[in-house]
Image 1: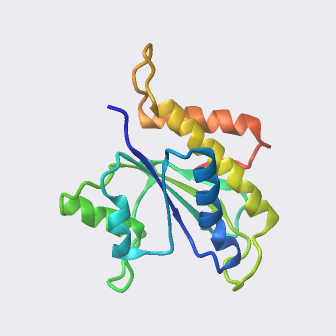
Image 2: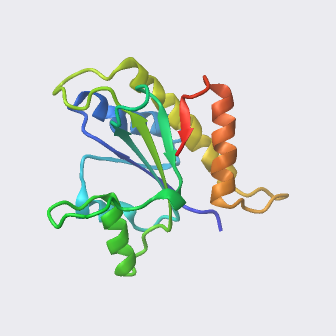
Length: 185
């Protein structure tokens, strides 16, 4: 059975580089019209509806570490996902929502890949996206396309494990772009 891949793009189109999720969703829908792509500004338990009934969830969002150049795409494989320490009862994020879904035995994905683009400015209301961040949308789309291709078994090849698929997709896309634009975290 071919896995159902869903791409969940998060962000806020009103806050400069945080609009990455919307721009990425539009590009992914344009390139892959049959792909299940969702853009939302929702967070916390509101995300639960978007997490259900898919085998592989690819989350696209911006991140601001201040430690790497803007526009760098960080790829976090499933094995590296952990909730931040000390979760607060006042804030529920993606990781806590996934954990809750699993505890409630809901059909949430076991396989999750986070594609996070380093933002320059996520605070300027109505601000334009930084050109380096905006250019990373192509990286996101290329990587999602490679993951989809790799996850689709052919008549001569069995389905590839997600870790191997992600590594293959990462290497293929890295070879097309300047070194350092993608980081496998």
